[in-house]
Length: 252
Image (spheres, rainbow, N blue to C red):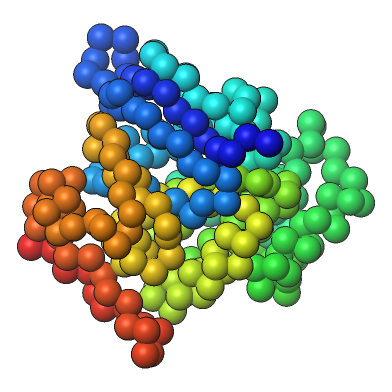
């Protein structure tokens, strides 16, 4: 069995052949069962890294392996949750139809097994009662849970989450963290987050991306390293264990 869910070796990537690289000299191993968080400034290459792992982009140099094979071949083992605000929330589609798309059937020919998997995924994230609702009617927190259910519907071994707490209120965010705590027991998680408190509370591997890539243990991530990554002073969110709440992120 391959010990790494993701392996990247000497990768360079540019969107245009002669443009400056978005990612340069990237080397990364994410062990099976890890809970990794990707942080860095806007435009630093975080979402590009996820698209390379998904096989939606191809590097100009180097290679990407997911569970020991190429990203396209590994897709049945990978679930992906995009930023919901990049979706057309006005498209007339039900919650169940959104979730069942995670089964990746050709031409949408879904079976009874697929519908049962969709219901089970909705139940796992606590929104089984929303199955027949329109996706457009849901709150931000509900949409996030539905998109997690879609990613889970295919029984992934690796779950990729792009800014999962963006545009949801703190209460919904805390519920989301509890959901992730359950999911990490059976799969590898890779999450892009701007919530620096997410690093303190949830992860065991911090991947700092800003064209290049460095890896840190969460407890070893210093203020100086944060400042170097974001190019301005950043104070991470501190989670209050006594009340389960979170202080606000402070930047100056």
